[in-house]
Image (tube, rainbow, N blue to C red; front, side, top):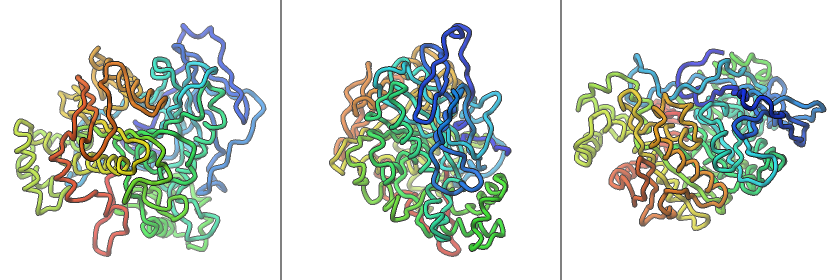
Length: 556
């Protein structure tokens, strides 16, 4: 299947990095899992196991059904290269108010393998990095970005070697079903498909169950599991906080630029499914025929069916998701789980900034763009306020700030304050302000730039972060340590970071990650309050649009 350019596959495609010559004489590590023995490789003082299967193929008769645990094998299975990637769906990267046209190279790139892993429905695989198979280390379980539509856990950006070795933790990344294959709600067509709309999330649950059952054999602690992800991975993490099958399988959570407050109503989810059947000319009574449709045809029909209704994603079904993840408040089921939540200062620049026209943006153009993000009658007031608060900023940077604050930033502060108000485990909030020098600095602090700092993979992501300077490495050391220590203890800390207070609705203490890291109270507070008057954009995106009204969302 062909893949369009963007963050979707780049953030979700990996590379098989085999052990270098210096380590070629070391014996290959073999671990006995509950299903059978797996052989990994040794590199740089870390043991690496790639493409471990945790579930059976989801093709054919298993399509749209809950995942099945991988059957046992008798031989030693080589786990030296990344496993298959879930079939990908082409998703538009255009944002509201943005016109199609030529684009500059995106800074989200450079993580694809040579050759790329195969794409297919036998994609329930995970990867493990560990310093040793003895001991009990905290585990960081990563769910990849790409919305709910695209991606893979095998990106070079997600390589766990450095963070595992330097921070003495175990890293797990996972592949699972996506888009129409992972989130098509066919529950109205019979009990067999009662949970089809959550298949992708159930895959992640099965992977967490694999961690609980096996991670001690890789030197991990099943009682200290952190789930985290960026963008779509953050949305999956948010969903897990309210997802009943996941209860008890994780102990901390980090949401990076993906605060999912609401998910699809069942009416919206079932409308997408109805459109899918219509696109494939399958009668509702013959839904079983969907399991025989060639996967490429199914994914293309899924894209057509979801157009104008938002991407395929989980839905509130009254059972596995009894309620929206963080609407109207934080879910009681995860009250005991501490969270870290944050965003980057100009998230939307990675999507809007590739348009060369942003270099010559006019005042009128800025107002028109703002009118696509805030109520149109408030666009001029919004631009005027931002110009007053930030008189030295260019019109392009103001555009990125307005659109980011309206979306990622507002939703993240709503999620953090709702978690804090719950009165259970604490919430911690961060803001990533480090500006990338790539392409002359045109992207400022874009969506996904923090990932290589968290994973300490700057050398694999120079297209995004720029050259690996001592200053950049120092920030990566702090961020990777903060994430690792949060996994270990439930409190984020790192050498060189100031003490990090929990978030509350009075001080709103925030760790600002920049060339100088610092605590600020309620950063961009005026902007937060301004956007809060409009409410979250997710309020309308989660419901079936009325006749004659546009629906959909901006995936990320």
